[in-house]
Length: 149
Image 1 (cartoon, rainbow, N blue to C red):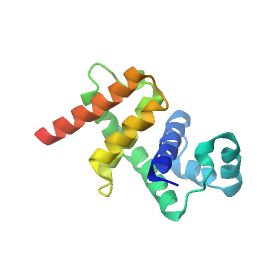
Image 2: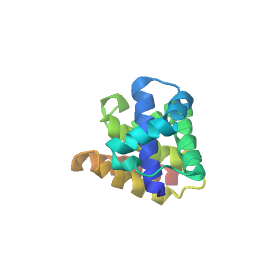
Image 3: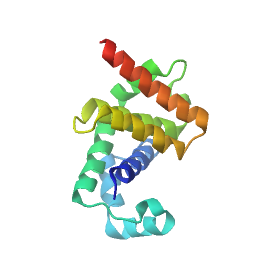
Image 4: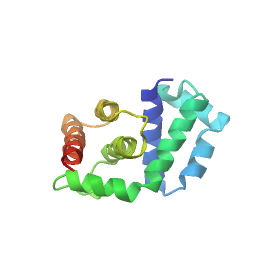
């Protein structure tokens, strides 16, 4: 499994946690149960390969950090999404933005450029070109703002 695939799984889990309000630890535990994961593989090729221990740790870490820092991350999104509140954005775009900003802000082992590139590429699979451009613009604005500080 590639890091891109693991990241996409984390985005889907972050989306699910935000949508259901379920505690990430419970969601993650249930998600990685072998029987449950096998049923997912039957429905979506994304889940064809079971993550190894390192990939599972990365997914868990990312989903947990997003949940722990959601308010801070959403404040950054508000700052750089001119005229848009997170509540008005597509849920997938918001999940992608949260993932990328979490990697940039709280995961030193992920290069900023990789987090941004992956976010833009993954959003292409979920959203319209205008939304992809929006995701890219928010992340670009964030990086410019960060460089100015």
